[in-house]
Amino acid sequence: MTQPPRDERYPAPVDSPKQIGIIVVAYNAASTLAKVLDRIPGEFVPRIAKILICDNASEDQTYLVGLGYKQVDGRRLPIEVIRNPTNVGYGGNQKVGYQWAVDHDLDIVVLLHADGQYAPEALPDIVAPLERGEADAVFGSRMMTPGGARKGGMPIYKVIGNKVLSTIENRLAGTNLSEWHSGYRAYSVAALRDVPFQANTDEYDFDTQIILQFHEAGKHIVEIPIPTYYGDESSYVNGPRYAKDIIKDVVRYRAHKIGIGTGDTAFASSLSTPTKEGTTAASRLLAWLSSLSGGRVLVVGREADAWLPELRVAGHEATAVVSAERATGLDGSDGGVVIADLDGDLGAALGEANASSAEGFSAIVAVDALGMVKKPGELLTQLESQLAPGGRLLLSVPNFAHWYPRARLLSGKWGYDTRGLLDTAQLRHFTGSDIEALLAASDLDVRRREVVGLPVDSDQSRAVAAIDVVGLAVRPSLFTYQYLYEVMPPAR
Image (cartoon, rainbow, N blue to C red):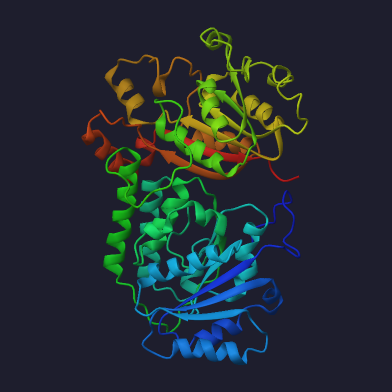
């Protein structure tokens, strides 16, 4: 299996102290369970703290096979076997397992299917990003290797359905996953504690709902390629019902994001937003910062000082760069504000702010800043130089190809506004392809990217909000209000 190159910024997972648990979800798997356990790599066995075989009230001898394997296992896998008194559903069985991982204070938990559809041989690969601290969840994707799903026996209609549904989910949720429907997953147990997974469905769309919760909470999901295997195992998924359920989930999530509905699956946000304008983008970037505990954060760009109270409440040491014009409106009592021109020498201006630490900032947030300077590439270079080793740069970039600027041009009434996409502070404008090209030219690694739609306040038309939901799915380039990126300097 082709593996992505290891990031040299993180130590290799050798002799890792992480407590790794494996949940083997099983239903009518008496003929395959032992074979799956046999395939766990021998060199990986000593790294496993616990294995839970969770039999979901099977109608065959799955539970007895699990007990028998535990008795005769020559490798002495740390197996525990339980049987749900009644069938609690695929999602319900996962809830049992994840709660078990939480209760046993494990660090990492892997979801493994007892039917052999997902390769146990990939266990070292799927936990590696979690061991290195690069992710909150790792998903095995069957779609990352071109043609791999078909070679592994996946029927063509399932390949097409998988890709179509994943595209719809990405557009509505603002994500960029190659596959939403893989059942091979590993989670940080600490991240699981932060999301209300017990509030999710017990059905097969549990997997979709937990992705939405991780996304909303700012958790970082990494994908790795895995081989596809389709054998004689039975499928209990009702395809049309499954498709309907997951579309319903992502539409409800998108509606929740723009103020329609309450998000009653308890979509988890870590931090609120500091300003009314750009609400969705700001809350997303703040959520991304939630995994950074007590870090040094620099904010540049639009109303950067407005972020300071929120960041400090979250335990960060925060500094904001503002223009001289913006500074005249501040009372000077807050502290942590540096007056500087983003087109000037940012390092010199930040000299005093960085005097307490030679390591730089653990995160820099650039709020629409790339459009506020004459040379965006030079600003990226300056910001990169202020990052600590392993630090990250979070960007929000307004989309000039949004329907509003286009409508203004077509109407012949071109002009700048005081706020929004045509803010008078914007000297440069970007489309999606423009910002992607700039990041590539700046040699920055994109760790994650999202899109957000029109920020809709509660007093605005619900019809506008509904149109935005549909538009973002059908024409993202036209309805994306802002592009969001988390980037890092490349490993040296």
